Image (cartoon, rainbow, N blue to C red; front, side, top):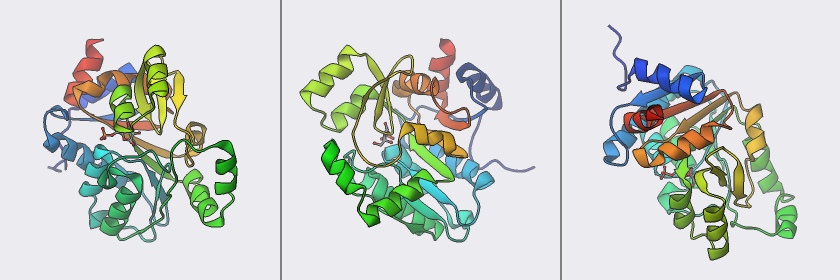
Length: 255
Ligand code: F6P
């Protein structure tokens, strides 16, 4: 028999995909809120799915966060395809160095024997700064790679958790509360219907760019993210493969 490299629950996966109107998802056992081990499983499940689609010379764009860090940890040389290029999906959106997209790209590239590019940009840039900044040739080069990525791997977070982690201004915090933000992905905040209620102004991937990306993996687990995942999946491109855990799945299927 072929051993699966990660635990999964086919029946739950089918039900969850149907509930979220997605083509495919993976469910690993446990609750990522309760143990880091579950995050590692999410990482391994993601790498396993990635292996099915990845090809030589492809560009992989990734976001930050502790779950993406777990994905990077799970990278192995078995993934080894020539000339892979890892790029951060968005600049700025401040976090711990180890959980920044730039750091994660570097880690993935080192493990898979590929290359990486960095994108350093402050959050909340003014329009003037933005216009000048993206004309810079080194920045333009990264931005073009990001927009032409073959694969995107990203996290999803609870809106308020992410807003606090990013030291969001009091004004924006109030806006998020007022607009009932529940989810965050790519620096965008969404309410439970998947409506964008706020966006961190930074360079890189914009939500509308996702429609040109052939393969998208969303990796997020832990019961505390159930609402966020459900909300984001309302607007997620249908080719998004969700990789999550049992705790999220049970919450969502409970209705
Ligand atoms: O900040 C990058 C990011 O991918 C967010 O878009 C997402 O909400 C968050 O990280 C998830 O972080 P974690 O995996 O640590 O919960």
